[in-house]
Length: 529
Image (cartoon, rainbow, N blue to C red; front, side):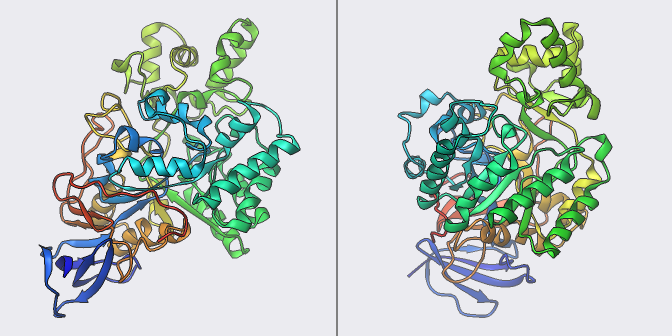
């Protein structure tokens, strides 16, 4: 007997084709059949009458930082309630394998690495430990270049790897790919990735050419440097012979507002020249990252006490934090400190969500000096910056070939990050696209939006059997009301679940039907069905 029939839904199958009224049957963890209206339905142990609600493939978020969330938030509520059934972690050059990346990722998740139990020794063991947590969603992972560098070069080394060090990095990456990693990521505004040359990354990324996988990059700059930085990402893919993917495509800083169209033209021109490049985007005008990203390349957060002992170095440091230089973006110059908010800050959670301009005025210090003081108290402190223009966001989002992704972390109001001003994208990304930009603004058709959330990212990242509603595909499904689906999280009140999602299936099991149910997520390996 069939396990489940979802009847009389508006089926939007992920292909981009128009939706149709029909039913979907599920047996075990697979879609058994897709029936058009009027075709007979089999007997089933459970039946859900959709009544015209939209049935889509479970949404796939290819840019998350929930690497350790299965340990701290296995319900992964903020995403499950949006209809997300699969996430890809290990982004921006930072990953849980090698294990040297765990301290920073644990801090992002509001935890300590000591709470995670014994360290894993391989990428495969990391996936096994994820599986043992029984997460509510599927999780797949990239390997971070920065973490590889940190593990092999022993910290934040401002030099090229020696030949034997590069050989070790290549071996670690190759082993992880053989054990199911989806590819390689870089974070080229963050230490230690910002110290890497293009040639170093090409040499490492070429490991993907033989084993498969994608090269995904938080490029070297998203402000005035973004055109050169995106071009470098594409060039790395071309030279390494691998697909290139630009993470969270944007134009950032006042001087760049209105340039999104030109950036898309760059992607188009490179594709026409034969390069294989894709991109994703989150639908918000604010970014979120670590406060340490404001530091110039010649100093790391853990080196601040030594730098501050030299008055001349202190003056240079504060000037470059404010105005830019030595790789620092210069938020004071490009954006304004009133548009930058303190994010997670365990030493004083009550400061989270307040602008750095306001906090600096209270202390009677320049904002750049405040940044240093905050980092001395917690080198993993976070920040949000209102750095993009809404019209640029809309220009990129309207493109049918740019995937939807959140750049967030799975959280819940009661979890470790529940007391901080996190980015509302953690709770709202996919619902925001469906509610605001599809239903309210008509920026793109519903079928196109769903394709950007399902089949396209699944194909690009090697998530076989997912992202489509078709016989034999994995039964990751979301049933939602297109009339009411909406994000409710706001910058001033971020811990608010999305609305309008009625049913979520993960691997054929009911994961959400108004309340969280069975946690049936899996650790996924590239190409594994």
